Image (cartoon, rainbow, N blue to C red):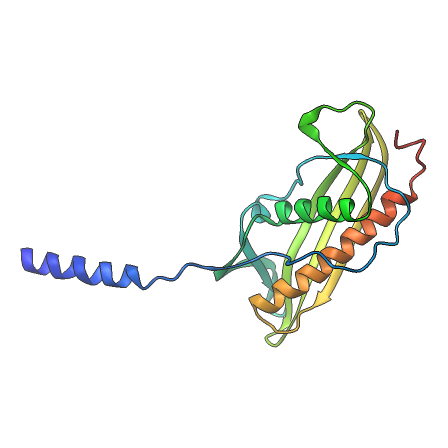
Length: 196
């Protein structure tokens, strides 16, 4: 009996050692194209709020041709951070790239508008086994103190170059940057007097 237990432990240890860590993706380097937005006001950026199914590092997909009500995680692929954290990090970098300033919410700066982002969707949707799109949908709200200055919903879809996790990651990087460009254009279009 002891011999059998020892063999079972060795077998399980051998199986466990063959488990490879998941492949991780992020959005890659910042795009080098010039930003054509007007001057941005300095803002504070709240943590991106996401539904529970997106508040983790799993890369999610939907089989729209089978059941679009069920999000599924890729088994061996993950984001390097949660989608909300990836979006927030990229947004801050793009604002800086555009000449704007992001003041940490924890710094407690007065008279700086607060931008809140609510992420509604960040999933890869397959309309067939060989074709998918990356979908990014969010709501941006700009506050002056407790007063809502403006709110807008943004959404982008980007076809994936391949119908897999790697293709999804590449498409998400493009869709995410497109949404951020839309948000920056929106922020720059708001009357400065309202955003003070």
